[in-house]
Image (cartoon, rainbow, N blue to C red; front, side):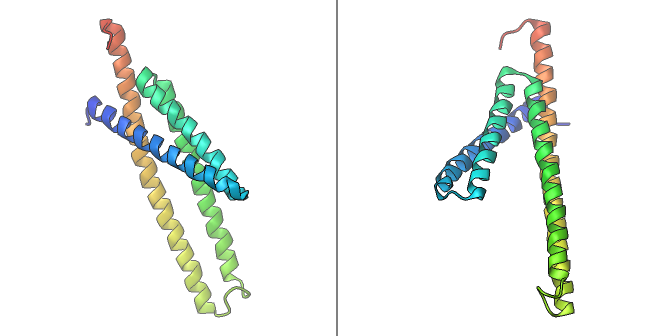
Length: 160
């Protein structure tokens, strides 16, 4: 079992890295919006939502509120489910596209293309699942740590 201090440290490291990456994505996407493309605008909105979620996570760390960390965990779970749905749809659409006679004329090449798309999709699903499992493990440990700290502070009337 991992100690509460280790989960606290991993939580702060994860929160800091997420804050920095969200801030950098926000800066990058704000420069891309000048082009006026739909993808740049969607990226800007997504980076703003992610930055707000990370701020909620970090506030949960400092205020010792497990509900804030739980809200962020639900946000990550929602993103994970959306990613899986997008990957499945991408695999099906590209599989149908490349299995048609118009895109690739040779049947053997179509089979190789569809197999490759399926393999890449499976690899992305495995990668996303492993990453989600790691993030979920860290955040669940942080939730237990925050609740433990709250109980300790209330029971000892200690002000840390």
